[in-house]
Length: 409
Image (cartoon, rainbow, N blue to C red; front, side, top):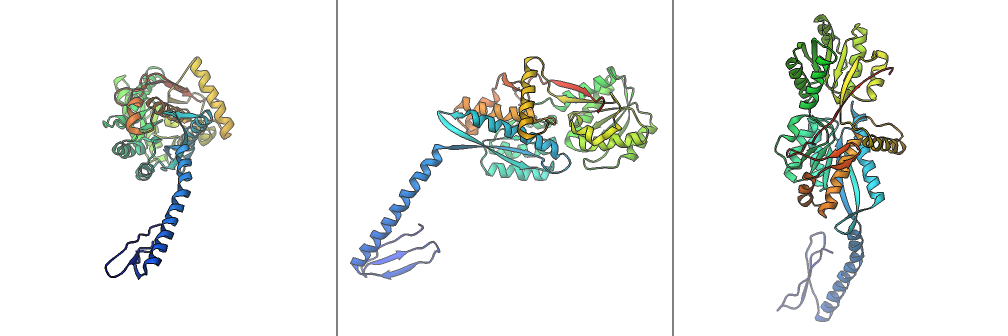
């Protein structure tokens, strides 16, 4: 291995050896010795080839198709990131259990899960790691602020990316043919919440807070536009950070402006403590937010600070009838497998894996170049989150929204 030999004349035969260390030796030999050495080297090479052959045959018989997942499994929203990862993992396990055949060959799906910590810089490092690992596709990221910068790396590598939860419109408006989304974007979500806040909740003086992330700012801006278009006033615009814990100053300012509704653009990790501090300040006004606060975890984080019907949030997606039964069945399987209820987006990561693998099967290839056009042309794939098909930008068509409130915890 790593050795070569040569015969040199007319000064007599010489064996030229280059061992793995890179050291060369020139050894004068008699003709008979030369023949014996050459024969032994050829035998060694022959033995190596014989042992390698079965190994290569076994590798080709069990083809591995890697699917990447990226999301925050550390930090304040780790519960949401792990929820997403679990959804993807369940899809991979079930597909492997049923058996996946691509172009007549059985394949084994392998989930490569990475933690982006909800940090844009770490997200690009994770994206490059997945690209270097030659994954066939990526499900993720969770946050808009991580999904958008990572999407360029996937686009440059030609790797399809399906986000189950990033809602900032910019994600699918960069012109990347590799970017897909399974939920409604902020333009739809923010506009729907704005109309509902003014038309149904009868909000007149509305305060808007965002957490300065791409998601938080985006949904807050779209909400504000809808509120103004509906004839209400935005009496305060404040901001915090996605890792902040003290909101008394901005809440005191909002209380002084007599706001009857507070809209928060951000995640449950901030919304829960904020609701606690609202209660301590005697504020029981309506609290409205996007899908980032529409979680089971919000009740744990806020404790007894939530008054019935005080919180209204919009969750991307929604199914009824037969579709509802499929979603409920998924939730039951998820709880059996992981011992906990879903948070929000696990059904979407589950569907993202399934629609991606479905495109591979239909294209008869896990090569992104070959299955990407098939994925883009997906029509009415039956998911647990409802029928899936994509528009020219990669957004899901006819995206549903479900409005929820909290009562009795």
